Image (cartoon, rainbow, N blue to C red; front, side):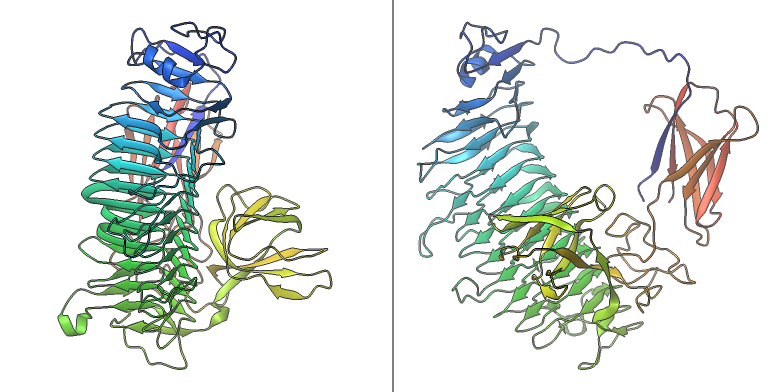
Length: 625
């Protein structure tokens, strides 16, 4: 469980010592279309006309600032240099046949705030960013777009034997693909990495294509290496003749908080093909397909997820919905052996062998581990929802099949709740992305990110019509982005009703799971308490969302009647033996335990600090085992 953190400041003089770090003689060099190009380019007036000139003039620890404009030449980065553009919407590095940005044998180098593209008339390029034998590299706030490479893998980014962080970037419309019988693999249309460690955070990877090697959006061939993909949208990518339409993940790490939607793999793994040791947590995996699609008739397994399996592999707190493997097995999930699927919602998937989950080596035949628990499995086809596996403490659509397993219950389509959104004032589409603008903001920050499907709209006569089943990737505010193949409907008055995958008020899945489940998470997909009293029991719910739950956070802070005392109140769980600990820090550097083994008092718990006036500024952290 993530600790709740609070900073309390008392009006008083707060003295801090100055801190100096970094390089002693760091300089800033400038690049501008209107500069006078005078070496060493240390002002906007003397700014270099080319980015490479300023990089060549810089030393380790220096920063290069680039003014808005399009710079038509690829660049070679240097160790210890930070390259900052004015923003990816106004500053571009544009190359034709060549590499946009190259890192070879570098350390502590970074780039941010650029669009790395190709000229509109160019039909082929090399790749946007090339990294080789480099470490501690950061790519931030960049758009890597439109690169087409027909002779090697990785059109957007190509990474070899490097350590890299990619943050807040968009990688789109890149392609590395050839014909089916071509000997080259053509893997990783958006990003290709071999023998590397990567952290990919808050990125959008969409509309990229790969060939036989697979990984339409991302290909990570990093066996034994640590790789993580966090809070990303990986949507509408294709692996034309290969596996992993969205992602090929062969590494050690996690895919967490992501939307994997609308991808297609010509072979196995429409959304994700994964091996190594990987945990897929808190993800929305929807509308992906493996095998037959777009006029192709290949056999493919695992419409949403194709999981090779292994120690430590699991799917937890995920919604796996509306995926398809029309000529294969496991429309939702295909797993070789030893499956771990916990507290997930698996709905509306299709496959010729099984719609929801297919396990190639069943436990009852091969004597292997099997853990499919606390899941909602509903409205999956074609022949059967489950094949080669048994479930325990799961909610399964009844009426046609008989399911074995302790604690299983039978559910129907009205298990989930519906939500009305504010009135929609406009809608438009671009590259299969429909953006609805709402009349009023809806939800808190990130509250409804990657949570919705099954969008409907009401026309001017008030008649409900189906707009298809789409991922909505909307944050707080007035805009919701829908990924799908259809254009927005014509309308004079439009409103949206959305069925999310939270449990309805009368759902039999509330308080029906097993608190002792292996891989049971502390929080649900929305970041709320995983064990919460839905009706009258402190028992985990089935599915990806806990009914009526709240986040673990400090709910209130207030002075008491006694001077110098401060009362903290936080959301808590009234569970047997549930305890909390309170830590105090004046500076976030050192923490002191000031209260331990404090028993839960119910849905909220309070603690009084009798020494709150000792420091002018203090931080509190509440944690629980």
